Image 1 (cartoon, helix red, strand yellow):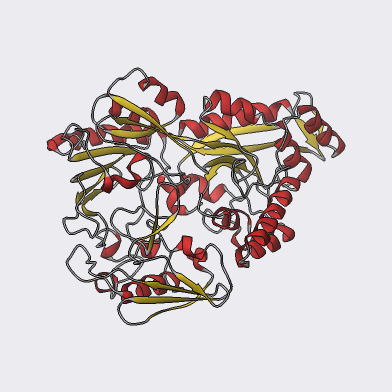
Image 2: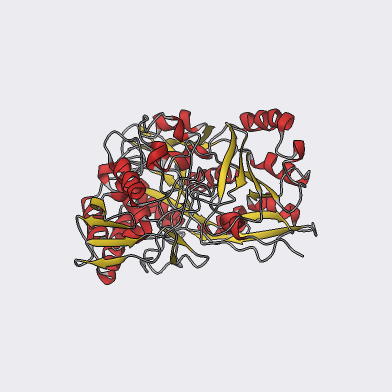
Length: 532
């Protein structure tokens, strides 16, 4: 989980209300530019805001960035398709060489031509040690990237990396616009130029981003001419603004989405995801660092009840970062709900109930703090349910809320109600979440989990070009995590969107945790057709 994706959903509840009130003075629906502005206009309400709009710093790395294109893109079935590449890459040298032929005649939105030098510039800049891109480790396999003329790019890899093509949905930045300025602080980060279907027209931080259709887009000018991304971090406020007609669509938690079921002018759309909710168990904490406590918490939580009550069935029990219906899930690593066994584990480990029912061991009370980002009702409900289940086993969990700026410095010792998930490949989630080299590296490996056997299996899975060998490696990762839980995984959450019923055949992809403008029914807004 990157700093960009996590900080994007952070806000205090009061700040969310105040932001909504301030935005009302210049709300997306005012001035003829928002909801109700006709079938050429779309306003969507989202919880998270990007920190940057530069792909050099991580924006749009998983595709659907709207301003940019990658070499490849994913279709509705998550299959890779050519984008700035004219065709899928040719793979040679036992999986160590990827050659991309580029599409001809593509131009950036400023009219300058796209070519191989822009691809080389993008990847080399991201990999530069001076570039503050928290996700650069995702490109670890690249040894070098070179241009052969204007229309061919060759990636030489250090090792066969079966997931490499999935990484090349990463957006391409224009060398002529982004070069020659500080990559971390330069103007390109807030005034980007790309080849994508939309052009940024304004960004009011904390309020909204506005876009217009790119008239020279290589796939054709979109029918939705004006796109507004309204930043509304509080779930309740987002629902209120949708109901008032200020928004055309929004992402909502299940308890708020159900309030629109009787509205004949609205559609509720469910997207399957790999988006998990789980509790970090910091190894430095004297309570959560105890293996018996970690195992007991895994057994004490009632995942089915969370799915039924918190998600109202819109999701699945989470037994790890990989969803149970994924081909990569390790069968047999499901955790049963067994409160009696949880209590027995704690008894045997010397955690004895005190006078108030909370356990103690060697003078240490079995209590710890669990943080969640305020304004996120679904995480709050998960945190409270987890605390309730833990108390039945004799463990006290003190739930607190705050901004990510408050939470981040406390992650070494305090637990966090975390989220994450990427459907493209198991390496994308598991490595950043669990590898010891990334312990407390930004929002990677937030629990500072260290397991040499898991590290070894993660490296084998990343470096192998053979799918069967990769499956065996990721099975070993999941078994290691079940034996020594670094997190208590709770649920995988379906994403629910409520939309005005004005467009034909809206679809969703299998979605990651990071559900901003690139996910939801508007993942392919550039292809939408109005209802006749």
